[in-house]
Each structure stands twice: as structure tokens, then as C-alpha cells.
Image (cartoon, rainbow, N blue to C red; front, top):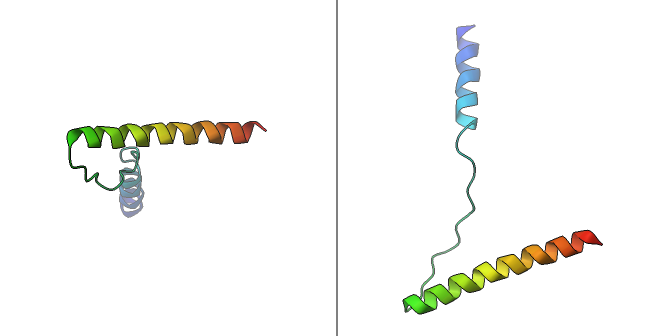
Length: 60
């Protein structure tokens, strides 16, 4: 009984970790801070547009 309890307890603890975070893309190799902020804003807008397109496609 102790062995099964330890096995299932360990399994439950290993699976109950923190929630998965958004995956991080490759690093941005910008030559200036302005270029880096432009790239980040562009990617954020592209993700927002992609979400809008996904919602529109599901509405039909």
C-alpha cells in the first residue's frame, strides 16, 4: 500500500506543476532599441490579426 501510495503521489506531484506559459520565439537580433521595439510591435499586431482572422473563420 505504501509503495502504491508513493507511486501515485509522486505521479500527481510531477504532473501538477505550474501552468504552461506562452512559448518563447527565437531571440531578436536588432541593431538598435528602436528596431527591437518595432519588431516586437509588429509581431504583437500580427498575432492580434491572426486571432481576429481565426474568429472570423469560425463565425461562418
